[in-house]
Amino acid sequence: MTSFTLGKNLHIRRIDELTAEEVAVWDQLLLTDDLRRAFMSCRYARAVAETGGDVVVLVLYDIHTPCGFLPLQRIAGLRGKVGIFEPVGDVMTDYFGLVAADGVHITIENLLAATHGRVNAVLFSHLDETQSRFGLVGEEPRTGLRTWLGTSFGTSLGTSLENPASGYWVNLRKSDKKLVYDTERREKKLVNEIGPVTFEWVSQNPASDMAWLVESKKAQYTRTGKEQAPLFDSRKVALLNRLLPSQEENCQGVLSTLRCGEEIIAVHFGLRCHDMLHVWFPVYNPKYASYSPGRILFKHLFSAAAADGIQVFDRGEGDTQAKRDFANETHTFSRGLWHVAGWRGLLARGVLSGSWRMGRWLG
Image 1 (spheres, rainbow, N blue to C red):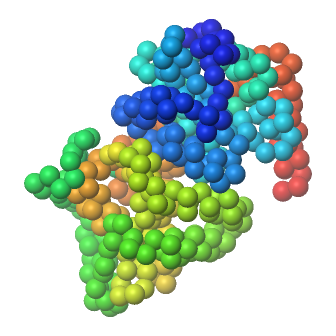
Image 2: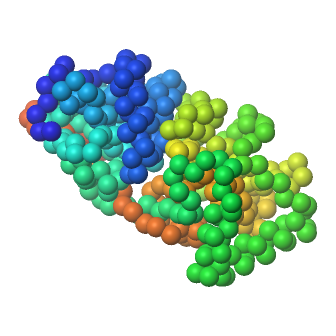
Image 3: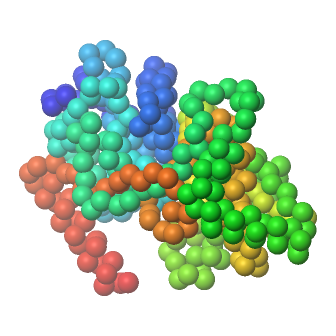
């Protein structure tokens, strides 16, 4: 698709203006392997809008049938006033891109030009390499990591004869015997010195456990000098709490806990999209750091998630040793700036350049 006409094969909708057909098509498209991402779901975009995000969706049509959705969020301040947008959820979002039918291929400059000044530029990150099949590319490649457990998409809950995570753990023992041995040794040491471990795949006290996660994550950010981290923003915390009770298959909140007695050892909150779990906010109690509680948490997460039909853990962008410990696949994200041609595009670039210089001056 290289030509777009606003009101015909292109519509700009606020998230609450989508038709029932459009929502249904969006949900159906998310079943595609490389689109099965909670951060690209209608439910996620709706939650961002409900917690203060200025969300719009560029809806593409093939004659009379919706065939593509590009959710965007207006950037606050002057940048937004000149039509600069970003991925829905901003820094909270681990995936960005077009959700579209097979065969859709667009020219992004033409798409933005067809909005007639409403969307003049998109400043983005977390564009997965598979988005190139739609004609969307970026710059500055970044590594993403995943852990495949070996289940299959569509497995009914409770029907598996053996836990697929057992096979994953057996294979990991062969490929990284030291990691498996050390993780199991530390868990035994934790049990012997502190007490029996209790793991909940789905927290039985979600409100209090989420509050613990948020405060612990903020303390972690403070210790590491990340004073501008997202959870210091009340709207970002509100987004977590909005997603926590979500049970939609395309975007389900999963809060898991690891305890010794009544004391929390580690917590993780992620988003599930069918058979994929996005690893989003893991945090552990620094009091028990010597036991590697994060690794112990993931050992239990793998087992419980696989038994619940999850095939893959997605770690988002970033290449750290902690993420590599259990990873068995890499892929590439990119970031960049798309903008219209002409004076609107030049204005958007100028405003962005000015805001970056101001940020460096103030920072």
